[in-house]
Image (cartoon, rainbow, N blue to C red):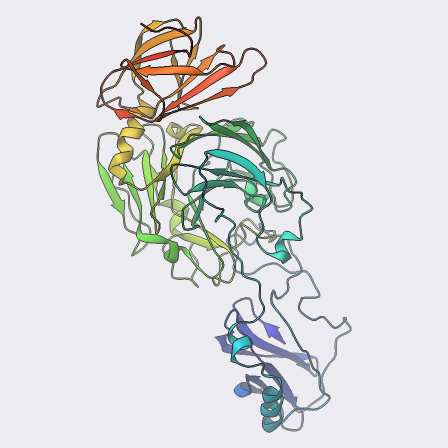
Length: 554
């Protein structure tokens, strides 16, 4: 007696060595106390199922004895390994032992079939009352993204807790995970062991969104960060942590669920360069021959909720650098992108701060291909999936369609293909419309030109860090950024190499800037470098002067 994979109560009995099965159509509700009784009436030739004292189903069977098997009695789990159900690809799965995740407070086995009145009496004697029926002692599963708001932009190590049954699987200390907080917005970026340390962008109301990793193939299907169920190969660490910017390094293997590598070179290093305005440049360094596909925006949904609960059916807004905008409606299936060039993507989560990504000019967001085929028939979601093989799962599969919202699930909105995507993307949070992102995308794709440089080697724009890099030749540096409509200046960043460990005074068009400016020092093998972040958005030239606090600037 037990539950099917879809939550239906089922009772199987072997009579004269033939198996008979009675399965109820109704599903057992989640997070609710339920009393189940099954009887086999040999003289009457009937198997019956009762739920909460009421008869719910029966089948006629031979009036003969039970054929017993020779295996041990198991409570709460299977006694043989088997494949999961509802697999996306049946071959990409390793058999496992499965069990119920819940509370079993009493199991009674009788040597006689209870009558209907005895079933009612047994139920009445065991029913715990409405308070426990509706609120059993089950620990909730809440994603650990609701850390206190921060007054400081910074990254720190911590140990995030999710659920005792899951957390007890890992032997980790208090520095297991990383959180990045912003002082300009109540959001964060989380590097959590239970998403294999893939960066997760978390909104102010604890809605999570991630992305794909470099994905190749193996004997058991997808070889990617999601396949590392035991977290053998993945980790994250803080590289820079200053008031001006944060750099996080994420390393993972591209092996399949059996830890088989198609090539020994299939490892990846990723770097997330994060700034106070909530933006971050993601750089993917895949060590194999050609960089594989790596962008596939993923929704992570709390246990008990699904994609339709956290994102609008007009889930994705796209735009290009020319100002064209489209809103993709998923009401009747995957929305179709009418723009050939849509390097700007805004994900319309049900939150004040939404998450966006920007890619090199010419990139197109698509929802066709497999996004139209991998959809669960058991949930009302118009997106790819949802799946429950990742995150927070030990299921040895590269894809299982969710049959309910009983645990954490993920779902994909689309993706990008083609060589134009390259290996970088700009991610972030915004409480504004997608039109605001066009200026940011232009500033990153076509940064303002630099001239009139004094005291330094001419700045070179590093797109992988969203920063102008220059080498100091003096402690009095000046140059002009030629901002325009096509190359706006949006929260520029300057990385000054060979500067040393002293703070700088920054003037913009002759005026000293302090409140809208942050700076930090990074120790290197040679001389320290200075990172300057300026909060400003203009479409006109800016004259920048960088000097030490004691240096006179005429």
